[in-house]
Image (cartoon, rainbow, N blue to C red; front, side, top):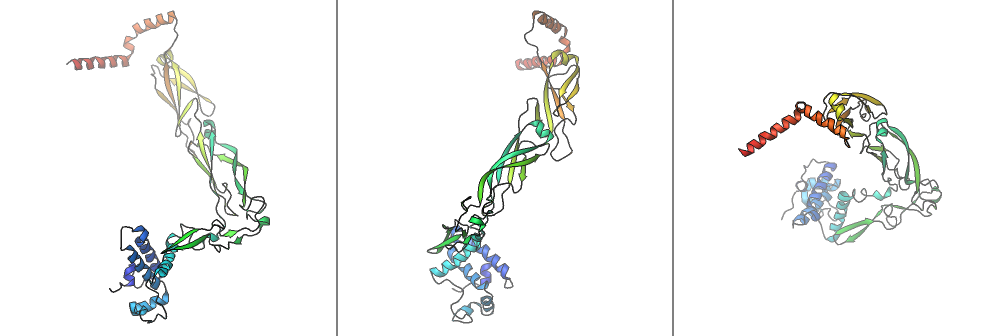
Length: 382
């Protein structure tokens, strides 16, 4: 069976440059890799074919020979000078090609590709701090000092992890790669280096203060500005205030999560506040003025309209919460709760009965409700 054209195998034109060839190969290798095509018995052969094409086309000299003579360039020594660059001739060749694919496809996942372990410094972890504040503090904003337990760079070794701040040495086991490889049949298995734990470097004389980690546990006091208008769930990021990096690596970030406590008088909905105010039955019927508290610690006078019912709301514009990092301010809503008197004296009961007899026509909601009830019962009888 004749071999397919290498350009056709990779799905590229003959004018493709090196970057285009590599991109096409990576895509084909991902698509045809046997581990991803367990249900396709031809995937291994197709995978080998793609590797064979790439082995030739990625090399400028081999590519030139192939462009001129085709597959004949690698048969009978023509233009090849030794063993041909294409084709698989046993487990060793397949394993070598697979090793290249492993690096190309999975290098980023396993540590940044070739030489990924050489970067000895690693970024510190991000930290979370939960901060509870009052609604008044959320209204006005505040400046607060918090104590954060975290890892900080060791001052004795300047974060290097080595005694006296000396530079770490290249790991002799992995030669600074941070990874070691073992051949298992057709496959090359890559593992974290057991000597340096993936750091790529070792420390001959570890710092006595941090024991080679380059950082120590310590509680820090940080000043935090909480802007006005924050609400539960607001997240504030302090860059570089998280856990210190390993061996001089950059620090992580600190995230402060805000929780605003429930208030005894006010309920919050975004920038608006709600305050439920009890009023006597007489005040609701006759109307009048009442004083209500505001979140800034002041008070406002509110006029109750005559004949107000429970649940009626009145708006105080600009008396709500500020919008975070904005000049906008919400409103405050007063909700009336008409209170029924309890523990009445005999005289009070007598007066209420007399009032009830005289006020039958002054209760429009009751009259409308019982009229609807009568119509409902009559319709059910029909």
